Length: 74
Picture 1 (cartoon, rainbow, N blue to C red):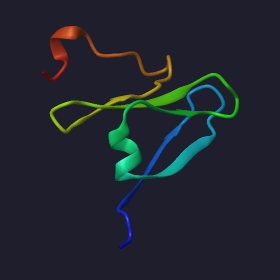
Picture 2 (tube, helix red, strand yellow; picture 1 turned 90 degrees about the vertical axis):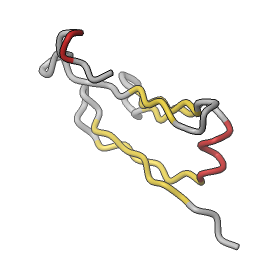
Picture 3 (spheres, rainbow, N blue to C red; picture 1 turned 90 degrees about the horizontal axis):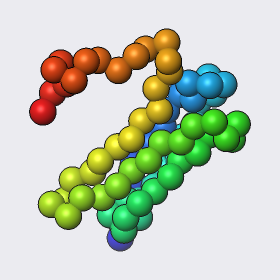
Picture 4 (spheres, rainbow, N blue to C red; picture 1 turned 180 degrees about the vertical axis):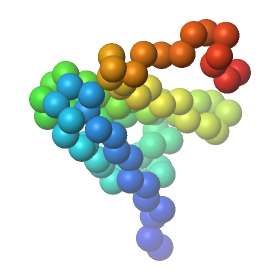
């Protein structure tokens, strides 16, 4: 039986290189996963939550500042 897989990727805000990895759903559910850029200046983080969901920490560029707290979706 073939395991389901997902491709995760992002564009590094520092060097603008695309970074991607192919992971099985099992490996994503084990816990914390890091996807660092080869330049060493950013990384994409994935954490599995106990309720069955995922939390993503995505690097952003300072050219696109985060929205004010009152505009965040809760």
